Image (cartoon, rainbow over the protein chains, first blue to last red):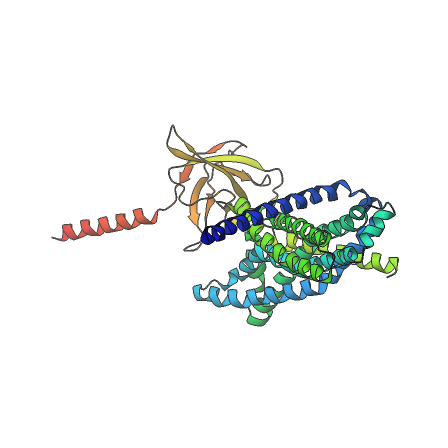
Length: 266
Length: 156
């Protein structure tokens, strides 16, 4: 009898986990729609969104630019190491540019954005909730989703593609620095092979679409986790952790889906 | 923070973001060179196209003069019909040979336009009649072996 109880208890636990996960996803989806519904304020009073672009975008610039430079430099070194074995070190530009524009730019910039800006957004909104600033707003007939959440969401969505483009551009520069200036790959063939291989529509536009999708995902997860957090110090800290973990998983999973849709059979 | 300082930083951020995008489009990608002016189509029929791909290059004297825009199989003649989009600035004589070449030993395949001497020019939509199929390595090796075997028999 005791054994049966334990087995039933396990299934009860499993069922509870699944239903609550689905319920939470439903709440998050409704929250996503309500952000769009209440976005009017963020564009009518664009100064609100401007402030969030500053916090999410401008303050992430340093980490994005420095990481982009180093990722590009490492790609230059490692790519040269492998390519020169086949006597095709001139293809270094192609390797660096394609890997950055298609994959590394949007994905790594998205991961950095989630940990630099997403966590900050969650902590800020969570703390506003814990200190009852959100309830106070509601008391004054100001909708906190329109006034606090939507500008942060749009700030993130606008910043992310620009940050990813900067990451890729900086990475290409880093690869050029190592490949051409340091190692001595021919400058002309580095650029001309790159330009022949990188397609505007297929590679660059798809990269921008990817970064836009990641921007929406990360900003959505960040504002939702903040808004949904337990109004305690512990709740805010665990919500911040969840933002980073969920964002990273969402970026990598959706990257696989997007890559499969965009580059299938190419 | 003062509003003007904030505006300045955001403006700066958005501006360099767009500069990065333009850099990617023009310097890394080939947006500037990929649109041909007044491009016109030509068709060519091949017995075997090998590894030719859509968006591959069409070259004449080594210069890219167009792109391959479509490849399909004709079930009546059992041939591959390749549609080329040629830059409008260039015209080719009627007896031009469209041949499939490989760039380098392992590189991708492209169509080379070997220009003839005819005074009449190919009009947009015309078909290039003289074509040369891709070289299939297996066929070439078996031909070589066959020739060697034949040579050996003659000597006996």
